[in-house]
Image (cartoon, rainbow, N blue to C red; front, side, top):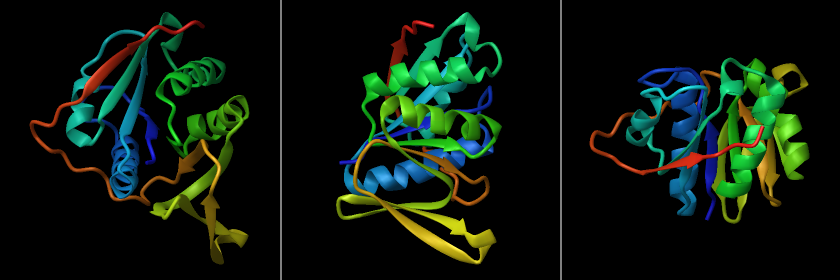
Length: 181
């Protein structure tokens, strides 16, 4: 059973394209392993984003509000995600391969004593292992990295995954997280 935690980016409803791609990849991985998709929303004030995530495949949404989450700050995101990951206990954590993900992923992996894989093009399950595919040697070959020890933090390249499609009427569990920052 592989639980997948996704960092949701952007504001408003529907979620950003990167978020939809991460949710789609997470849903496929979770379905293949009878796991759950858990989304993280970091915000300084409540928005309509949380409610829409269930329709795109999230089973649980961890919503954290704090004044320091007004705008992106790497140290604050790492501290918040460390606390949430401790509560959610995911095996795989997916972030977009953007400036936020590139800064947060290695630092989060260090804090969680986890593995890290960057610039992922595909994610799939094969038995007990989770496989990550990424380009190597300037795009001349594709490497397959098998994660056998968890958790693993991965950044996913934009426009490489099939985005999640909306399922009307789907519900889930919203969990309010009190952060200590």
